[in-house]
Length: 476
Image 1 (cartoon, rainbow, N blue to C red):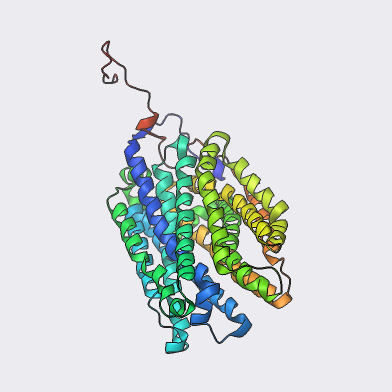
Image 2: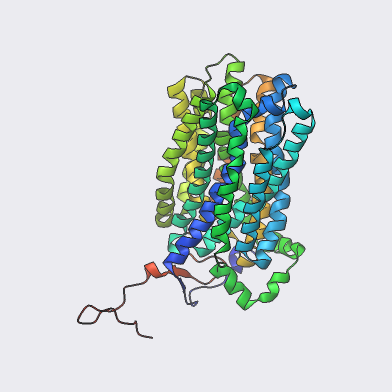
């Protein structure tokens, strides 16, 4: 039985009306928590080439950058396990409870990372502790992003899911931008001696108040309409085993699983090349090979500028996808990666103007995926397995192909001396995106699988008015 043949007929199902203010509160809870999560997760990469390489890996010579990025990649080893555990818990006990746990774990782990002694103080124990804590962060991230994605999609009205979903990636970019700005300010304001002794710890300490703000908002939110409907109809689904959930995906949603994996790989390879590898490429890799690199402050400034451009446009792209569909936007990003991936990397080696242009090209390609993937992926699976199936597929795809991209690219450049490897990775990601998008079924404007049609109070027609202009109750 195929994915298409299993989809129920929804035309006779009466729509559920959700208060607009509740939809916006849910969006804020998911978004603010997501800002904190990705601020925490991203600051390591912004400090990697400038500080952490010398604080934790000073004895590894030209391979120190590889080891530093390897510690970053270690978080992705734990993301599939975190996705498996938190995803299953989210399908059993609800989205909001699990999301409160993930943000708390991430905040605690990030503060711990800021307290790790340097290599000079404790020797090899320092990089070992960094590795363990990065794995804790990865375990948390495995349940966080897909949970926030699921929560936002299940609260969003069907006709505006692209718009509300784009706010999730708005918050992700905000988190990365906040992390980059904080790290850039610390690097610019402090002399090297203070930076390497205590200054680099400040961005990690700021994780705690950010995390607490997100936790507060999430704990005040009730679960999603789709999850509540499922529990009312079939409370026994809360006892479904992980094995049974995997069987459902394998037997009835294999195409959806492959499409989801392809979209995730393309989206996240582009993301991690831009946000995690390019800072190292510009500040460390290019100067090492005699090319025109840049200082860490300038590299951070350029990246923040590109992210601000993305922030200005991403919600509009999400809204556009509600009108023209998700597939045209995803296909545009995929083709652009194939055509412009290598030229964008060449531009990074041509001075500041070329570097800004190359970063902007990669950022605009990324925006095509970031704006619509949060509304595309949840629509591929039914409510009863949405969180768990997406968590496993998303995190396996990211861990195997995207999160490891900075480490593999840097190792390939170091081993071969070829500076074009980031471009090759972007082209490969674009090809995968084209294939996945061709097999994607359009879901824009349609109810989520396993849920009743959802609208908000803002989308209802205005109530009838009396002769004096007083609103009357609608007829029952």
